Amino acid sequence: MSRRRCFLHQATAVVLAVVMAGCRRGAEPTAGSSVAGPLVGAPVRVVVPTPLLAELVKRVGLGGVEIDVLVPAGESPAGLQRTGPVESRLVAAELVVVLGLGQEEVLAPSLVRAAEAGVVICEIGPVLPAAQLLEVPGEPGRIDPHVWLDPALWLLAIAPIEEALCRLRPEWAGEFRKQAHAGRFELDEMARVLRSRAQTMLPPDPKPVRSSRPGLRYLARAAGVELVLDPSAVGASTERPELAALALDLLQPSGTKVVANALEHDLGTVDGLRGYALDLMLEWQN
Image (cartoon, rainbow, N blue to C red; front, side, top):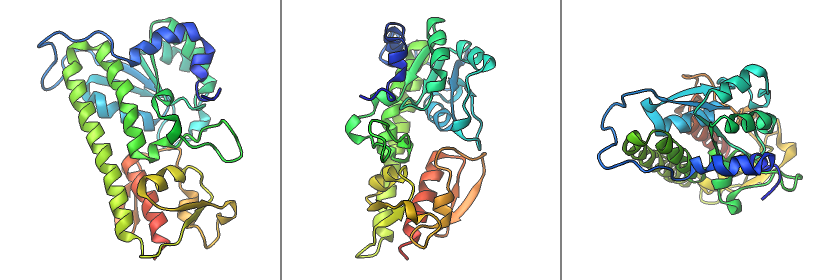
């Protein structure tokens, strides 16, 4: 396990060993305590760095969560900064969900303070199988963070969020677990659709997709498409210009629509981003 991947655990092993228990099963709800239908009461206050994580939390929490996103849609996660107001938002939360994998290192001191204040910290990276994670080319030990492009891998990130929410609102556990199950089903179905679409659109003897984007390896793997990394492909005939320019690190404002292979995709959702990127990859075969 690399140093960058588990920065939260290195920052304070004692504090976060206790807090990360919030990402495992906590107090179990008593029989009949789950709420059927709309949740009544104060929602769980959740802070996430990016809309990518906000979408995942919303998939589980629905009306039972109030989500504060540090980096708005359309802005790069690279702009994430540790400031006084940001730390205040983290400390005021009940739950903070981070990707890990070296993506929020700048927030490490503030996350420690939030944990000390009793905030549950959920880090997604450690629950993902190490064997399925890809390193950044030329940087041994640094994990490529574009894990959400593989829906079969991303669905594993639901479990720690589910457990944390059930611990914080045991009376709503039944509803959270139902939504988590639905979310896993949807992502599993998305994995099937991506692979089916690739198989349908690829010619009998497909050419490897050449790309300068290492993060696309997760999507290519999910779809069963051969992808060859080629830094010289940028702007060349071997890579679609739209694919080279696609911002894999962020979602666009809700309702941002684009068309590829005659299909409309909403770049305001992770599913839409996956579908659009795959269609741009496959379009090059035709």
